[in-house]
Amino acid sequence: MVAFPVARVPSSTSFPWGAPWLQRYPPALVWSCLLRGLALMAITGIGSYLGIAYGDRLSGTALGHGFAVAAVMGVVSRWVAGRSLDSGLHWRHILAGGGLLTAASMMQLRDINDWPALLLGMALQGLGLGLFWPAAEIAVAQTHGPVPLGKAFTLARFCEAVGSALGVLGTAAFTAAGRPSWAFLTAAALLFLLAGAALLSPHTVGRRAISGGRTDPQRRQESYWGLTKAPGLPAVLLISIMATSIIILQQSALPLDLVRGSLGRPALEPVMSNLMVAVQLVLLVVMQLPVGRLVSRWPTSAGLRWSLLAFAGGQALMTLSGFPRAPGLLLVLAAQMLTALGTAAFLPTASTACLERAPATLQGRAMAAYSECWAISAVVAPPVAGWLLETQGHGVGLWLLLTTLCLAASRLNPDQSVVAEP
Image (cartoon, rainbow, N blue to C red; front, side, top):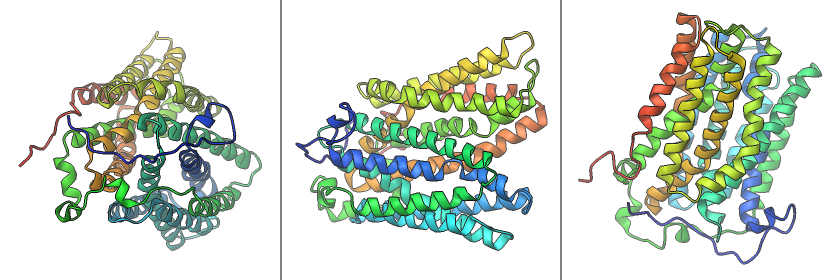
């Protein structure tokens, strides 16, 4: 496979603060990764806050339609962000715009009583997050300097995991205090801080370095359709849809299955169910750096394949946990370990794989397409999983289906083009 050039920013300096291992990274890279952690602190748990804060004011149908509106607006803003990045707009400006729009959504959602207010808030949130993610991915590609791209994305994902953990702790604190709406004000303040910090980011190279100096007009006119011609990229995106579906279902289908119980596994109390889900988040924080550094030494195709196999193992254990006479709780814990392992391997590898396979002038669009994989999974996977849980009355069929799909996806070859070259 021929790898297309990926932006690198020469750097002779290191991050001057923090732990010694953090000082090995260029300051611009650490700054861009800290911005991601700050964003995750703000947005993690907001979906559950809507149900907690407004479940007695708005119907479940209204909340579901609100999330659908956010997803649709996210599709639009992701495509806009990708084209803007490839046309030369700096990632810091898109990141700041995304932070401001998302902050505005938090202010709108802090106290709502009707559908129009929810619609506006969710539309702003979808627009903001759709701008944020492609820009955040390109920021790592522009600032990784002498650090290998895989290790740079490992640091980025570690910061995200820490930010998510802090966001979950904040969720628990606001819920315990009986002030869930305060979460929106706190999130808005963090996102305003994010916008300002993005504009103050250390200087990085301009657009010409990203494109490897190419000035071919035909290349500049390429559209999103050009991504299908990049060898291996369609396969990476298909794998990403499968993997992100697994990750998203750990926050939706898994708690529901644990609370309801399965064929032979007794139902857990809501507190215990939340603790089981939190185990995976804690494991991800612990595993992300060592696992990410390990897989960064492998070809990205190998990292993606092993992450899918770890996901398949986790879902297989969840399937077995539902049967009578099986050590259900122990199998669930083991499944969380394998799923966290797969997540730690997948997250940095997928971003690196997309950038490696995308032409330099389409890297912004490639990161928008990768971000869209998360949106597709968020829209499709939870309703399908919920339907299976409702119709079967247990999660055995769901986890078995996911095991089969992960094994099938692991057979895809990201080093070959799914669409033949013309």
